[in-house]
Image (tube, rainbow, N blue to C red; front, side, top):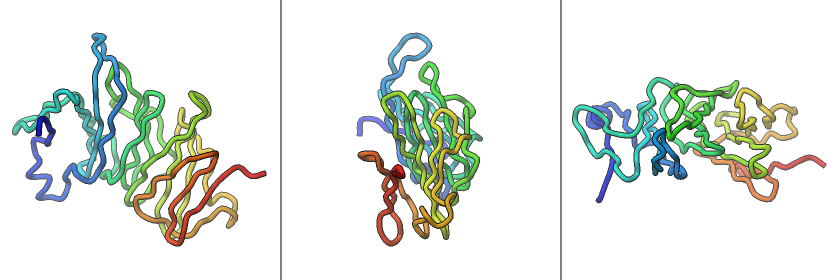
Length: 208
């Protein structure tokens, strides 16, 4: 193993079942910091409700007194993370357990310390893994599946998550697909959004 990162309190977190390992890591595209240096970063979060950003060229390894990493954001996620974030247009999107979907813009290779926008609704366990569709740099939509007795597909304006464009429960029974499920990632292809349900796959598209 040439490099790695482990939180300074990794043993305590494991003992308390608040470890980092529940969430996936996302590699970010090359970013330029305030000094004009190109940074190769990765972002991840887990059960401890913290966002960790590491430099992939020097991930920080283990330090018993501090997390020697590029950036750490505390206190902004309302629950643990059992999902992957999404990236689009210099923004990282997170959906923690019992929390709203949140957008963290990137400036000079650093995530904002607080989200720029968040969804009006929250997502129960296991939170949400967002997916993004766009026409190049225009009309970007963040899609997220909600777990529960009655599941739901949500669509949000990627530039402002408080603007919900659609959800599958807003038109009576027309678009409902039944119970939700864990760890659903909406898939977008050829103008359709595909959602894995408990009894099949729900397919969403524009009404004609």
